Image 1 (cartoon, rainbow, N blue to C red):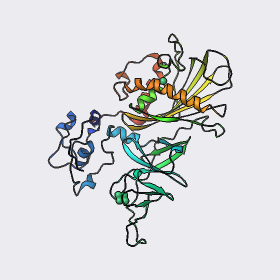
Image 2 (image 1 turned 90 degrees about the horizontal axis):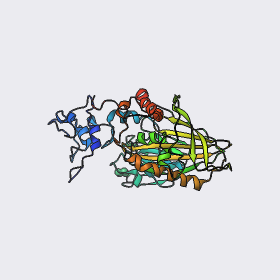
Image 3 (image 1 turned 180 degrees about the horizontal axis):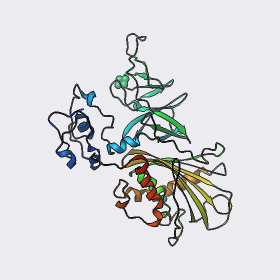
Image 4 (image 1 turned 60 degrees about the vertical axis):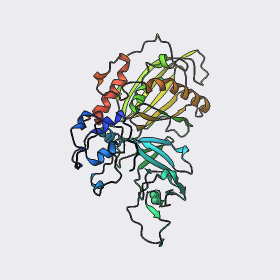
Length: 407
Ligand code: FES
Ligand SMILES: [Fe+2]
């Protein structure tokens, strides 16, 4: 890697300075100097390069022996990254992947998505020949074609053609294969997992799994906030009268009854009644405000559906929210909705959802710390926070997120 300027330091990189156990150390003991824990200890070469504090022109001959699978400039603590990498995460709306390959990023890993006759394929966005970005290439007859030397890769990631080979029938090395990932297409969303053994199931959302109910896809938006901060906001009802004044928020004087959060096989659930301001439901029930019952169903780590039932009505709305942790403080939001009309008003639902998201966005992006405090004593709670507390505790109890940075 050739660099003429030192890389800017990112405060978040301090979390990535943990020394992986058992990795070879570089002679000469370079230190990153980014945090106290590293200052007096030798760094393994791969980690120093990974952190961006050591820049070198040539990888040494033994580089592969000390290679790490962590992404370059990983913004997560290594232990958290390894846990999160074992979940399914959403990376795109299926309908947005057309004839060209598309780049995506998940947990600081660059990915390429392309469409084949049998569905969508996902791989790390890295040509095994010379490290070129495959997302800059093209797709032809199900083959992903690298823009640099035209190597062809099939939907499973195997190289099927090297255009410059003098003998086009010559055997192709099996090492010329992409780092392909598992995929699932569900609810119109493409999900992938960085591990071959996903640790948790995909959400199974009521309403949205009914093919008779047409789905509405809210255009994806990216927030400069941690995925967990977004999820916690999405599962918080007490902010409605304060933040959603222009949409559906009710009176600032309303009290919130205590509510019970229940563990499920996949996450957490709770029910809560609320008096919404305005009347946003297409069920011809008159009134300037509506009492609704919300049922929240959260699937760890970052997916939630709200089932919204207004009073005295046959109408039910299903509004799902799932997010891609692009990096520690960058979150891409995918929302899908439907309702029991079977043909929801797409323009209205999209417009209203974007407005509601905008009401939340600036406030969540400005929360500090950007990291969700998983020790519940690190922030002060109020009775309305039962879900927030259960979520923080669940991330620790079930998965061990938020472990020591320096173990
Ligand atoms: S770098 Fe991809 S084909 Fe050469
Ligand atoms: Fe909100």
